Amino acid sequence: MSNQNSAITTSFLKCSQCGLGKLCLPLGLDYQDMNELENIIEASSPYKDNQPVYRADQKFERIFAVKSGIFKTVVIDANGNEHILGFHLPGELFGLDAIYPKKYISTAISLGTSSVCGINYNDLENLAGKLPSLQRQLFSLMSKEVHTSQAMTVEHAADQKLAGFILTLSERYKQRGYSETRINLMMPRRDIANHLNMAAETVSRLFKRFQKDGLLEIKRTDLHIIDLEGLKRLAGCASAC
Amino acid sequence: MSNQNSAITTSFLKCSQCGLGKLCLPLGLDYQDMNELENIIEASSPYKDNQPVYRADQKFERIFAVKSGIFKTVVIDANGNEHILGFHLPGELFGLDAIYPKKYISTAISLGTSSVCGINYNDLENLAGKLPSLQRQLFSLMSKEVHTSQAMTVEHAADQKLAGFILTLSERYKQRGYSETRINLMMPRRDIANHLNMAAETVSRLFKRFQKDGLLEIKRTDLHIIDLEGLKRLAGCASAC
DNA sequence: TATTTATCTTGACCCACGTCAAGGCAAATT
DNA sequence: AATTTGCCTTGACGTGGGTCAAGATAAATA
Image 1 (cartoon, chains in turn brown, red, orange, yellow):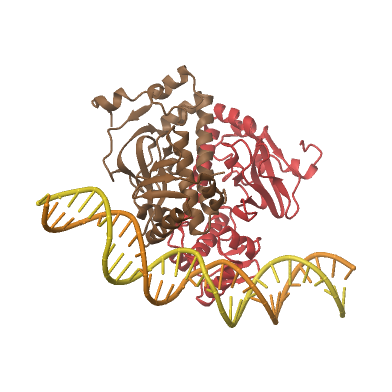
Image 2 (cartoon, chains in turn cyan, orange, red, blue):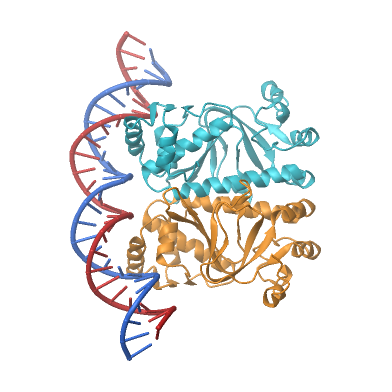
């Protein structure tokens, strides 16, 4: 799984040059510590649309950080129904839920062309024991993950859930230096609906209503938020405030 | 916040004598390490029914481990509606979601007479840096927490959600050495309903249906699971398998 | 440019579940 | 023992949102 032969990815490999350092694992690390972290990071060649990074039930070895694009994590229940646990933006980790059971719970799949950094979990644990700032950041990111999942369970009505979802995306893109009001959703309606436990038709109708109410404009995956405050009021601030 | 004056709680303070060591923070620690952990644990005097351990928005200083009884964590949204994030059984940690934002997100409240161990989070971080086994257990418990919250978002229909909830309780009590089929729910219908985002009336009707279908028997908070496999089939195994 | 294929929208229908209201039961209080 | 209070159950009714089916748009492929 070495990538020495992949010129493009290795040249962008170093955390210190990545631009996501303010959000990702290296947050809070000094130059020295970041060097040590870089030594255990494995960059991978890009994934094409809809390719798996890992599959549910595979042995857990690595956690992943999104370098570019978006990934979704998906579980399949006993009835064969898929459910999307989450979408992961650049600088976000996924695979953390596999630490406890020591195997992947979900399958991680790229949306569009996307790339990751893989990090061997044993190496990461060892390094975190040596670098207090890395340990702190890992705990912090896992805490955030807990919070994110919990927030999802609070929203109730379909319009609340969709508004909340849009707002979390907006917030996360903002943190990454992108516009918080002009967003390319990347994922199809079906995926949004699935993630929020509703029908794709409901998403469609709600987007229409949100447009009528002057909250946003949307055309396919091209979203323009017009009334951020109005959306927050609708969402009840559960996810986003 | 010292408890030197509380004879009962201090006499049961030591992790090595607690009986929950197989589930709680000390899991995987040797005698030496457990001693070090014991030094930063603060036991508190018991909470009466419905008393808060901490409140939302308070500054985060400690995480808590349940010693006896049950606690619930509750958030209040912008409309003033309460939502129960989770119930916490002996040996489980709560307050972990406060690490990232450095303040408590939820309010933690006792159900019936219950008690906790408080652990100063800075001390815990420092100790985790020194004790690899403690660090590993903390990561593991946080990963589990992520998994638990995610599992909740998968269930869809009301009967699935209720069956899943009962099964997770059953599983958790079993791990604690209690019966997996005879459970005292402790919490009122209203709390169960709130936690699962449904009406208390629906919980009532579903319990009736579950009884009619021979899945369980219930009288007030006294639950007897008759057909564990049937419940698992109903739940779609999302939370419990 | 035409044709296929996937995605999104819109309408009609219906059911699971929420809401409202009344009554039963058990625990707490007097 | 009697009364109050809170919790649970049951029924009647309405609705949010799911399902099904048909079109519309856009993207992919020929």
